[in-house]
Amino acid sequence: MPKTPSDKLFRLIQSLSPSEKRYFRIFIRGKTDRDSKYLQLFEAIATQETFEEEKFKSKIYKGEAVQGKKYSELKAYLYDLLLKCLQSFDEPNMIDYKIDQLLQSTAVLFKRGLYSDCRELLQKAKKIAVKHECFAELLEIIRWEKQLAYTKMDADFLDKNLEHLHFEEQKALEQLNNAIFYRKSFFEVYAAVKREALHRNKDRMAQLRNIIDQEPFSSLDYAISHKARVQQLRTLNLYYYSAIEHENFYESGTQLILLIESQPHFLNDNLSDYIAALSNQVLACGLMKKYDEVLLCLKKLKELKPITEDDRIKIHRQYYTNFFALCTYSGDFEAARYEMKNCQAEAAMFDPRGYETASFYYQYALICFGCNSFQDALHYLNQWHNQPKSVEREDLQSIARIFTLILHFEMKNSVLMESLLRSASRFMKKKNRIFALEQRLIHFFSELIRLPSGKSQLEAFHKMHQQLGELQHDPSTKALLQTFDLDAWLVSKIKGQRFDVAVQEKWNHGHA
Image (cartoon, rainbow, N blue to C red; front, top):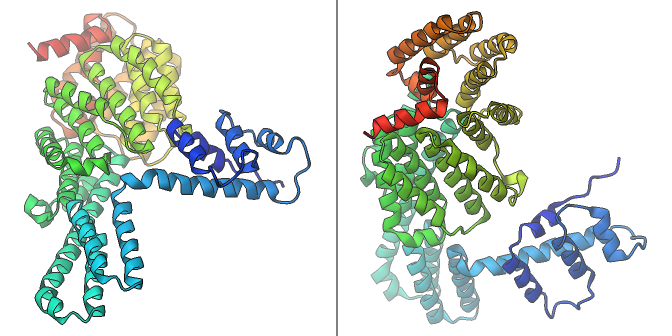
């Protein structure tokens, strides 16, 4: 069976910005002539939007037979050359690179016995490493300082500085281990939250609580570097979100953003933590009804200049995710639908293999539902359901089934609803997700589809609304209501009005 051609060279070239492509053309000047096959291959791939292996090959070899592995070797050579070029393009702006270059230069000078010049470079490297908290690199710099003194047999230097060097080494090692601890804790909480954002399972919540109940989370003083303090606050912030402790979620997010903004030089090397902090704070401000702060955070997010492709995707995703969330809370579904077009146009520019679509499909469904476009809402919800299933967001997998029932009720698909009810009930039992509200909703829909429209159904809506009020302080109910405004939907059916009008009235009442 023939081997499927690799598209990694195509993907790499397609990922290049115009300035990176221009840099590559400059980079290879003097290395080759204009007719070189690997330059021809680069230009052929750079001008195509789809991967067509045979088309690329025919452009290079003009229809001639290709001997052996010549074409594969050509691709491999061009791929390696591109990586070297991009390293050269990226390196001047990377802190790790600057330190590494100084250490490599130190090694060059050391080999030639230029020890005083070595010490000068090590001082420069140490200054950068300390400022940017590059603890692993700092340990290497200190090792070089000791090696330099030993080689010079500089007993006077060792006598005066050995104790201090040892102290610096121990401190750097302690800071490194401290940062590793907080990073590990953060990823433990992050993995749990990605699995289920709003925890409704007491056992899982207890596991998270055990992490943040550790002494290192009792005070910022236990985090002994800026990077460690950022990870400590990020971990607490995620926990408070998952535990539905809105005030603590907001306060920890405010503290985190102030901390990150207090040391802006770190943002020149890594934006990821700041993007996540702003995104979470948008949600926290929304939950606390601090909508002026929501708009401020969204503005900060939109104005960020990405460093990496991952930054660009995250800024896009987090801005639109949170803008759509604000619109669905306020009932401005038309504004959200307008922005959907911009979001989808931007999304088309990303590589689909690295672009997460699932969460947007769910939001698109909510937006279309709010615009009374039930068929479109069902289309996007089906696309969401058809995504590959994983442990990620099990809470949404459950809530989406309730939303599906609501959609089909609005579309008057009462016959189909019976099978959907059975399917939803089986799923929730299998996943152990039959909480009090889900039980009542399953029972409510079972009754609703058997009642004639009019007074009987209206009484059922009144009863369900009353039961929702009795359960609203239950954490598991809060989790569901945060994803879909069930209260507004029930009110809309009771009052005989559109869903978006009910949401807007609720929003305006909360701001009166």
